Amino acid sequence: MDNMKYIAFFYLLFLAGCSSIAPEHFSLKTNSSTDDLALGDTLYFDLSNPKEHQVQSINFSFNGENTANDFVIINKLGNQRLVVNFTSNNQPITLNQSFTVFANTPPDVYSYKLINTYPHDKNAYTQGLEFYKGELYESTGQYGLSSLRKTDYKTGAILKKLPLNASYFGEGLTFVNDLAVQLTWKENIGFVYDPDDFTLLRSFPYLSSKEGWGLCSDQKIVYKTDGTEKLWKLDPVTFEEQEYVDIVTHNKIISKVNELEFVDGRIYANTYQFNKEVVLIIEPNSGQVVGVVDFSGLKEKVTKHNQLDVFNGIAYHPERKTFFVTGKYWNKLFEVQILKKVKANE
View 1 (spheres, helix red, strand yellow):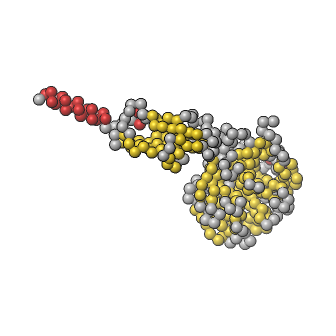
View 2 (cartoon, one colour):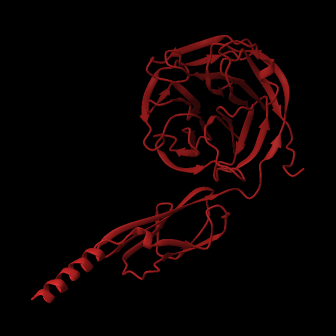
View 3 (cartoon, one colour):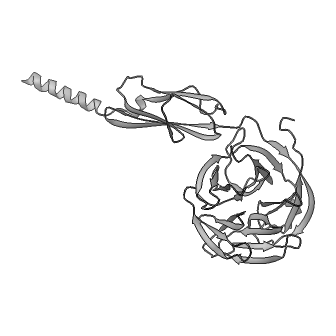
């Protein structure tokens, strides 16, 4: 009888030891490290199970999409994620591995030529800057000071101004289908106006994007940044987020991308707190930074005062074929021509 008790006791211990399987017993096995993938590469993967536990209901997904294969073709830049879900001994287990895919080439470097200098309201915390039908429009930020305004770019005179409610922090601005569209920062809401009289026509929520930063449009797609590395593509009517790409160079992920301008198939973008006066040139379909415009020297031309802040605000004048740039609390607006690129490897 005592022998039977010992047998039963050790059997129960055995069952208890088998009732829980540590996830560390498994791992994801791939043919790549986390930082050496490039566009067009094939990523092969499998579940490593050295202790040969029984595995059921195994499912692989890459970037949120299930795959029945043991490989995927890398066709996207930026952050990638491989996930496997499976069951072992009735215990659900999830493993994941992150990858970063960088561009194959570094961005080219551009310079600028200063064409004209105009007055600008030094009390404007410039967030969005855009020409529409030859008129310069601006979105300004800060709680209690945010506004939508139309200005005479040659004189700096404010022709029309709509203050925002003090609970809103104004952000990016663009024009879509003859409507003015303005973002707010953390309030999870965007506004749509009649550009002639600034009548508020409707608002829209952010559903997936984190915050409101930069905004531009090619009239078919609206592009939005949210402070992360994501460049969102929005529906031009509903402004609902449809998808995103990550903004990347040949060696880094870029976040805090601010004011945006769409010109000839490329997005020109300010960056916030970059400690340099630069504009990124982004290929919108892939998110690759294909160029960097060095605007060094402009801030030195601005009157110094206690509130003077970073370079921000870029607008393209299609008739003049020039860019207009300024900064937060800058008293000058600069008309510039972006000069021919210098190859990055030169």
